[in-house]
Image 1 (tube, rainbow, N blue to C red):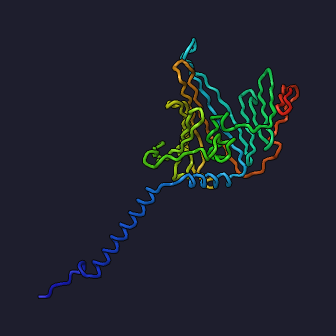
Image 2 (image 1 turned 60 degrees about the vertical axis):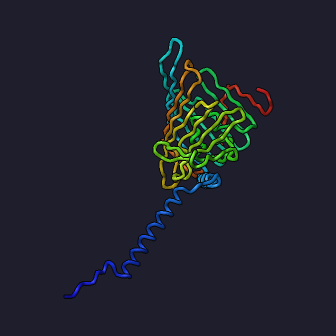
Image 3 (image 1 turned 90 degrees about the vertical axis):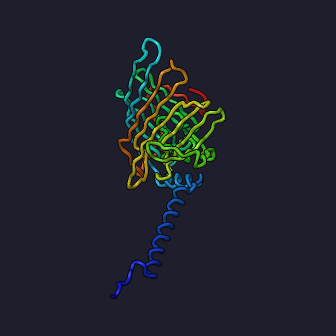
Length: 292
């Protein structure tokens, strides 16, 4: 009686299975190593610089809903809302920002590379200002912070910070999930003790998904940023919310919701868009000459 050969136990087959198992284990090790890999501030800077270089000019339109919740006085519990449309133009380090209400233009800020311009308009008065100082765009208009952090993170007058002042938290202590995405914290401290935390997503080209400001261990404001992926731009900020948390229960609570409605990149923008021609009758202060 002849017995058949057990092919599954031949030397050649055993060697083949050994190679499959070894290869699989090696791939798993590589995946684990990649997942656990510590990135550096240099990696963040490289990704930010690449995005900043790719977007030479930018014209972006936004809808903003601004809400004030009154928490004291006769109006306690009342909530008021303002709807504004905003247009922002950026060319290199030049910028122009216009806020519109239903009654017309209400605020404009521009910087042409050398001179800053401001124009505030109301039904009763139009006031302007000219200055040789660079306007701190990113710090004054806090609800627009996600634009500057996305497209001009390495321009301090737009982003509101110097990159060298950022500190990367260690992976184990600095990992936090934001809207289901694992992010790493970058921390910046001000001289007065205030602290800003930027939650960057390594899987989205180190884009910022959340910004927190803190004072004496207390959160004072927060931006939550929704990202989308564009074929030309890569990851971009598409909408965000901003909330201000007052230190006292009697102070008004402020919040804003901002949505990008249109975005165009690298189209020519006339130089005249970054200067303000003040209308007749406007009260203009020229700080360069210290006279009105």
